Image (cartoon, rainbow, N blue to C red):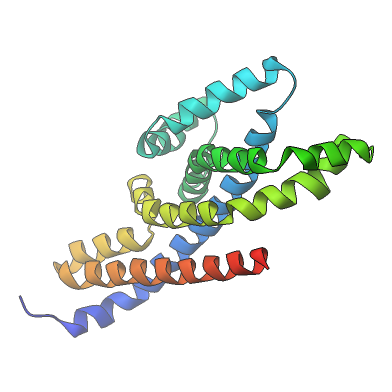
Length: 216
């Protein structure tokens, strides 16, 4: 089969639409996963087991359940309980919630890597617990975990095509729709394949730059 540049040209308007949706899902999903993951990590260090135990159960359940199943549940089951969200909102929440259980482990490792002397120094200075977390522990912990968090951003990017199953027209969804309408599969699928590679590479460069700045 010969390569058809006209098919690429015809697909580009839909590609840009799909790219925008993909980047929106990635950015918002990453934000949710980073914030919620930190919340999970802090709750897991709560003094009360009545806080730690439910958080542990929920995060283990989410982490050990396929993302695809969670997306189907959020999109098709929740409306039966009166909770109806748009497809993109559902996808963003689903991917953010799923990956928050992984970023939680990253944050926990970063917090545990902070030297015990830092806690002791904060106690010696009589810093309030909240202030200790804000100015002593979290800045050091987050600096240590940036590379791992960056890896999960790229993983989320590669999982955004799953949103197609709940009718979100991200890049793969747009490519599939174009292919079905024009019976041309090679060109649109190749274009989005190259797009994923380029976006992943640019994201890795950005994360390396951020990591170097934090080290300095």
